[in-house]
Image (cartoon, rainbow, N blue to C red):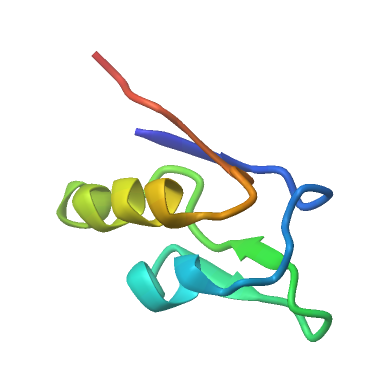
Amino acid sequence: MNVDVDRSRCCGAGMCTLVAPEVFDQSDEGVVLLLERHPPAATHDSVRDAADQCPCAAITIHENH
């Protein structure tokens, strides 16, 4: 899995940091910070949930097949 974030789309809701704190954080301004571009398999479900719950669609997931 590869994860990308579009910081310009982020509205600072913080759902990603609540759902997958090992992969996402927020800057002092409240904008998403990507901590793990290639997160470990154990976090993939939470990363997918974070992307699904992002109200701004700022998180993009590319699945490795």
